[in-house]
Image (cartoon, rainbow, N blue to C red; front, side):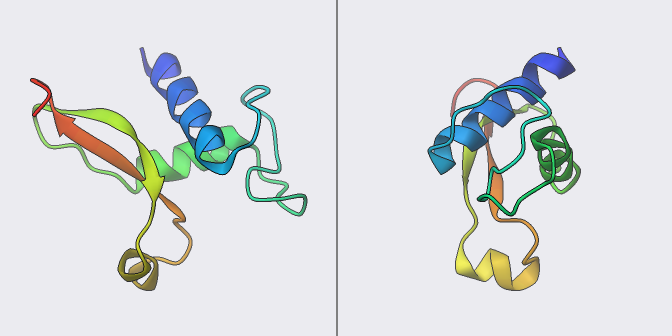
Length: 86
C-alpha cells in the first residue's frame, strides 16, 4: 500500500510541475539542475506531513508564500481530506 501511495504522490508532483513521470528514480522535477530522485522528494514531503486519524491523501499543491516562509525547502504540500470525502 505504501508503494502505491508513494507512486501516486510522485505522479501528482510531476503533473503539478508538468513533467512526465518516468519512474521512482527520475530527476529534474524542479528543472535540469535538480539531481535528487523523485522518490527522495516524495519521502521528504511525507516526512513533513502529519495525518490525523481519518485523514487521507487527496493530492498535492504548491505551498503558499506563508508556508514557504516557515519552510523554504518544501515547495509542495500534501492535500488531505477526511476519509468520508469531506
